[in-house]
Length: 242
Ligand SMILES: [Zn+2]
Ligand SMILES: [Zn+2]
Image (cartoon, rainbow, N blue to C red; front, top):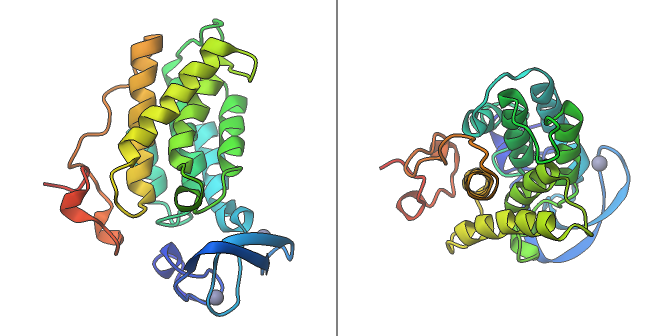
């Protein structure tokens, strides 16, 4: 098995081979849970690991952060998870990370929701759960981006949005739209960049529409992870250090 801390970032968790992305889905049995899945991502050597098994350790980390991390900065929460060994460089755990970082910061800041209640641990768990429903590779196969939807998830939970609440639903949609506007930069996927876009969009919407101050958006030129990304777009990315 390949070294988890390095090869795992791009590679099959079973054999370390570079994963293949297809524009068509095919049937696979997960090597860990033995359940059947259809997916556009697979190992050329025939291995397959489902999103749930792929992200299990990372989602456990997010639940522990929800319980104990006292940071009030979504960016710092993002970086703590980015640098943890359970996080792959690109992977669907980022879809849960964006709402988790935003909601943990709101909980630690004691921010009141429009209904007067505080953001709770259970709400953060719900954000992690909703993010985990977005499949890996969605940015390339669905005209959407899981980390961007993470911004919408955080705003939807903050507002208590449901399909039958117009204004709340609108504001959550606006958060995802703002994130998607940032992510349509024409570059190939980077889950770190998309996560930064996701929290930037949510911070902006929460400040402008709900007077919630989560601090500044991530600064351009402030990426701390580009050296680990062999596909880094470097100067074409707004977060690449100048
Ligand atoms: Zn493999
Ligand atoms: Zn599995």
